[in-house]
Amino acid sequence: MSVRVRFAPSNTGFLHMGNTRTALFNYLFARNQGGTFVLRIEDTDQARSEERFADAIVEALEWLGMSPDEGPYRQMDRADRYVETVAELLEKGAAYKCFCTPEELEAMREKAAAEGRKPKYDGTWRDRTDHPEGEPYVVRIKMPQEGSITVDDLVQGSVTVDVEELDDFIIQRSDGTPTYNFVVVVDDVDMEITHVIRGADHLNNTFRQVPVYEALGATTPAFAHLPLIDGLSKRKGSASVQDYRDAGFLPEAVMNYLSRLGWSHGDQEIFSPQELCDLFGFDSVGRSPSSFDEDKFRWVNTEWMKRLEPAELATRWVPFLKNAGFEVEVDETLVAIVELMRERAATLVELTEESRYFFTDEFEYDEKAVKKWIKEGGRPVVEELIQRLEKLDTWDADSVGGVYKSLGKDREVGMAKMAQPTRISLTGSTSSPSVFDLVATFSKDEALRRLRRGLADLF
Image 1 (cartoon, helix red, strand yellow):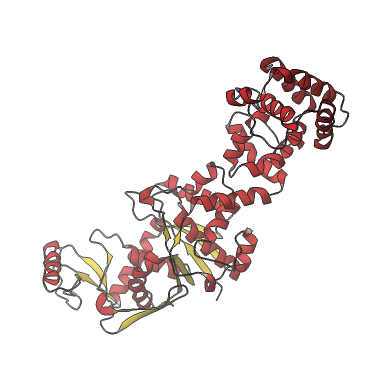
Image 2 (image 1 turned 60 degrees about the horizontal axis):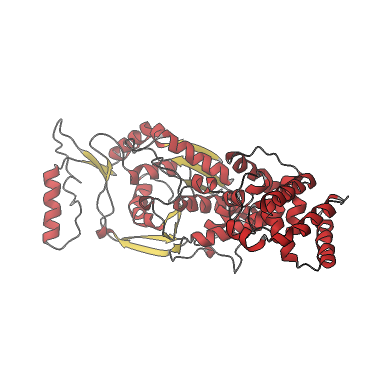
């Protein structure tokens, strides 16, 4: 049977990093096995579900390059199917109507607590047929009453639970709405899901869901319950995919970093999306929780900024520059700026901040830098520097560097006394890349204009 996996988030919020890691492992397994990646929006919580969140989930997956092969399907579109399935289970005796009142259920809980037992439904209506007319009821699944349930999990290994720990849980509420542990099974059966890949916090649900598969006469899928990620929680306000996108992280870096939260391949840290698809397997997914490390995430993004072709990185950078108010396009100059500056920033937002002086001359001179490096006796050196640069026919780092070196030798002036006033004139501070590369990355006219302005303003 062809592998079919599903990612099934609720549309009650944006796609955060924990859910994104779940989506990623589903996607990687599907690609590795030549299977199908299905997206299903679990929107039965109508009070909290919003269409904008469903749209944001699809947008996030597309940005990451993980567009689903099928979907998005929506559970609310399948409401009639759930009602139909409940009726089938009632008809075959695999489920039953329960007319217990809230007071009776509370009494059961209190009795169990008093006797030191785990509170659970006692099966009062499991085999009764004296149903009261017109009274509200819920529908419960008939769970096995003897033995145990074992799940041979692809990550957690063989896990067994005694059925005494379980009760006949509700599959349809008194208002006719179905419950989570029921609808996900119906969906997985109808969508022919072969592998259910989700967080380890769902493992307890699995032992309730396995008997539902059996009641429906369906083959139980394989399960893979992924280790949890420490330091992440919607309740703690962890960032969404869009938050990291807007902060200047690259999709390759997001996929790369999240893949390493639970999965490994030797000591390798940096993986292309294709490598992840080729190498992924559950034999290399650990059971222990992983920790989300923002600094490590930034490092991975830094590595990807270095690895992308400069023209490609420039293309991705343009929206951030435009958002900062700079009207630019991808050309030789922008690519040159990328090559010069990308190792000085961890994100595209930081790259924008670090590179502002290439796109505007509206900056203040750093007072401490001016005080340290701008000396009255230095004016003649800068004047001659400008004169020699003006005579250059070739404008590149080597030619520019030759001017500085020859002038330093002729004037017996240290490089810093030429380089630092240059940096201050061109950028406003002394924090910049190699001065030869810096000057050459500007056009000749612009570099000379700023040097002349600096000569007038600073000396």
